[in-house]
Image (cartoon, rainbow, N blue to C red; front, side, top):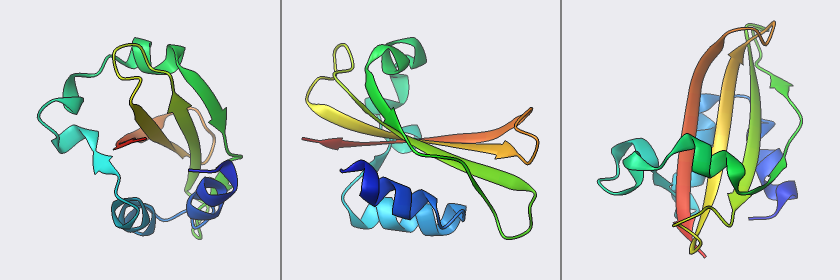
Amino acid sequence: MRIEQLTEIIGTADQKTITKQLRELGYIDCKKHKQYKHISLVDLFKGNDIETDEYPDSKGKRTYQGGIFTQVKGYEQLEFIVVNINDNKNTFPIDMLIWAKEI
């Protein structure tokens, strides 16, 4: 995925829309995948990454920020999309979505 495409998806600042669009593009939710749910966050964040800006939701309660991770040790054949969902002060993480797709 190109960063411009991810920026457009993250810019919706809506978890359901983001999830739907990633699924439509063929990405797999790592939390629900037998093999991918055991990926180390340390290894993931040591991979190459490029990130989007943060985007507030329509209620101003949460912010959404995404990243594309490649060259993850042991998973070099995959591209990962990480979506960080934080409170509006960016002090408390609400959720982290991790999606993967073979490249």
